[in-house]
Image (tube, rainbow, N blue to C red; front, side, top):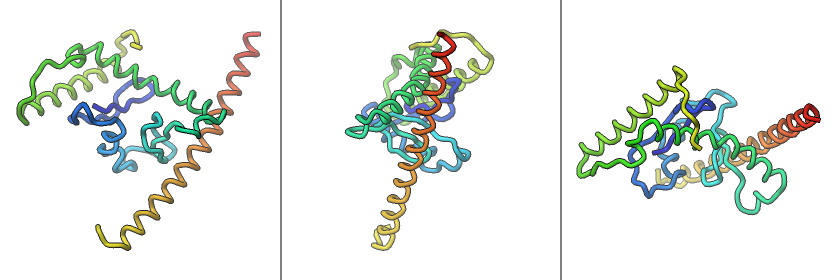
Length: 190
């Protein structure tokens, strides 16, 4: 299951039904939110993710490898991690509300049984959102043609450049804002 949540830990998008051995980034790339982002995002909206996900204008990934060693990139990654933890809390709350999701004890022997499990999971997610909306107070847990190929490669290169530029601009604003807020808090404390 792949879960996308908002700042209030309400599930805004999910994908259920891939085998447990599927990587999160692979499942994300199967989702309609990845394939058709303009259907889900207004201008200047984006997801944040860890470094395993593909960086794009709609999914800002943490820096990885050598790039993560730069002080600004490392600080930006820390800022992203502080926000990404909400998704982990959302999943924890979901599992606390619906214990059956912690350990589903149903064998899946055919398509009908798989559909039943998927429907159960989706129902739990809908109920999670309903309970969140009414304010229940749960404790947070923690084509093969060559010209098409050239067009595709050119498009991918342009998309990568835009995504890199977007992340760089977001990093600058994030770091400036966090440093300004930290100075304000430090001055207020002293």
